[in-house]
Length: 65
Image 1 (cartoon, rainbow, N blue to C red):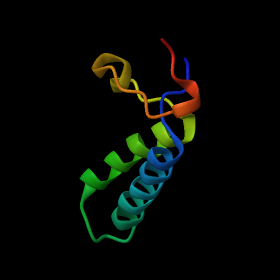
Image 2: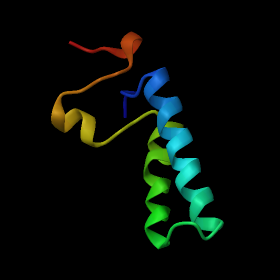
Image 3: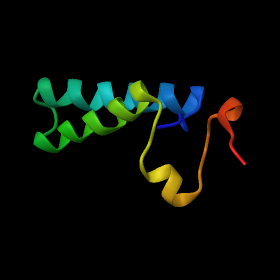
Image 4: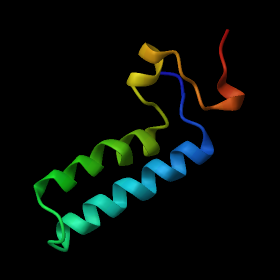
């Protein structure tokens, strides 16, 4: 599993994921806020499973081919 999420993309994913989870825990939004786990996990692990399918790689130093 090669990293395909760049630094800015990673920061945005982590911030959005934490915000969604925080809003869910605060009761501001419903259970759909738990979807924030997905961007949080992809930001932490620096790998997005959808990116290879779409041919996207935002990790500049990790570009392959």
